Image (cartoon, rainbow, N blue to C red):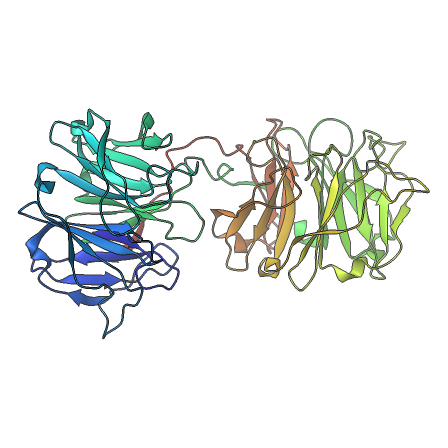
Length: 519
């Protein structure tokens, strides 16, 4: 198998296979970890004992191939970016190495391995020495220098690209006992922190790093078995997806509510709570029990809550140390219900409403509390317009006659956010000390936008699929008492489910395999 990257210029990572008769076949990627049957793009490739996908080796913006002949010569095929019935996708071969490349028992296209912006090669000699050939950006190999030793313990090397998400391209290796190992690139090709990330990999005849084939901005890889079946392993940047296996915490009846609002400890016991509204306008409080579920409900509003069409749990919005609730009316006014920090016979958990937005909030189809998104110590609001733009209202930490609790809106997303049917603040979901966003697309994929402390969402990371079985997904806050934000979700049948957050702890770096193609 050969992983060229995006070989046909459609934005998806592709796969190339070489048959025993020397035919070269192109298999377009579908962007979801699988490949089509494809078509022949060449013949006579049996003259090479090694064919590599090297990415853009000549800096023209197209993915290229490099191949080695049995006589030790090295050849470069510049990609054209177009693969059709009349175009093979590459130009004629150019010799870039006269001899000597047969001294290596493994040669890999590792993309930019030394941080200079050019695509490189790594090669291993039988004694386990590892050499980096820094690319020149012209399609020619650069000068070699030794970067490590001891790699003879592996029967296969894998160019994993940026597998741990730290911005440098990494290496993997399989030992003869079937264990799979990962080595992080500390920069300039320095291999560090080798650790085992799997067992049983001897069932595969070939393992190849592909880069991102699933559209989640994380490096993936594929493995083929002797039958020709190719399996895709979606990478996770060496972290888990941020949550444990789902648990049912409510058998039925949750469909009686037309609004669910996650609130961060509404009764002062240190656990995440839930508010729920019925169509008759009554408001109900569900106290978190500290074990990942909710206790017996208590009615905290007899009527009138049907006047609102949107709610947001905003944490301590007015700076009094108690968690609050924000609600919007259809006329565009915004209201704050200051929390009292207690829900008992003497308090429903909130004080009388204060209008904090005179008009205009009807312009948004989503309003969510995000905690302190910009790192100033005050809780903020995030709102989305139907055109997909995203707006941040930085909190001021006080609400009085002269201050509504937030500053003027700042656009933090120009467009594209309309692609999500649910969007909410997730707290510090990845345990990096900054608050994050979660968003779900109608196809059921769940995406994390890590906060960077500036108020702007970071690059998206896909953290799940199949979430379209739920009609409502919420930040459960610290529902089970472990300090990590949890997730709560309701299905259309009225059942309620919980996912305990993990803080995205370190993992082996990949999800279970899926069938990508049979060659």
